[in-house]
Image (cartoon, rainbow, N blue to C red; front, top):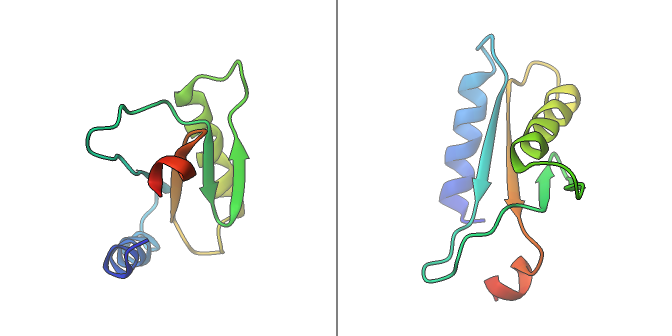
Length: 93
């Protein structure tokens, strides 16, 4: 991830520490000229999750939200999650 983007996300997370609601910042890298696919993987708080075959993308993101909320550091109310799909690593190179 770009250093500037990382600093901006960290600033958003810090601001949200005082908020009452928990926020999941969902980030998906979209490559120009490449068709966007539904997510099959997500990484949040260093944990990589795989979408279940019967799970909708919205339900998958809700599950990641619940995981991040339950496992984020005390006092933190925002977490970033990167979502991607099978073959993303090959596409990104």
